[in-house]
Image (cartoon, rainbow over all chains, first blue to last red; front, side):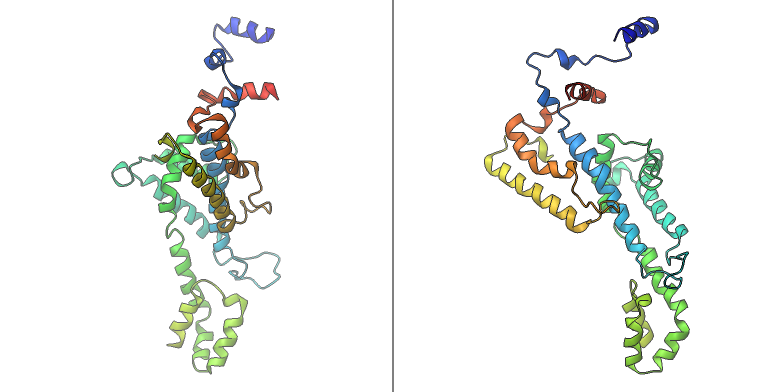
Length: 203
Length: 81
């Protein structure tokens, strides 16, 4: 403390700003516990855990173990949803966030804020943080921004599989229905909208 | 907003307690993997939601809890521990 006082005297300003609440009458330490809504709910639970878990769930949906184009047991797994496609999902979320304005959503989000969100949650920069009020913006808007976020990727599975299995489907259509049931058992074909694909094939 | 409505009754506290349990169950059921870890939601921050009603009864309204500007009061707590 002596060194600190000397430094403060040399710099002619306070390094450790005193908190006036320390001098309050009947000041209660328990009242100062980190249990307030900002640090407990907004930053503590929602910002630190709920948002990363949400993004993780989206990634897990797109990177399901059966949605791969490489052979089973391959050393380098090639996912049906490539890294570029996955990056475009997060870029889409960032663009949706930056497109918010006060007339449509009652909050105004700048491009810098959206880029900050991207750096913090997608790139996982450890030095990036959000204040409670800024997390509150995400709390209000993310449920609407996440809706149909991965619709293009889910739809594209149908077309991609359609291209991959076009020749096979041509044969299947001219076979019995039992063959289709056999194909349906293949784990590689159990992807999103595959039932829709089968309808296209069998019609 | 809801938390700015002062004068919470005992029925309101019971409802709040049930809502906190429901929130945690909702998180566990919809997002079982906490950012890819196996620990689920067995963390202090998530668990402490369940004790929020007790804290309101013991220490008062949530807006009375404050660590003030720049979280300066955390220093006091660190020094106490």
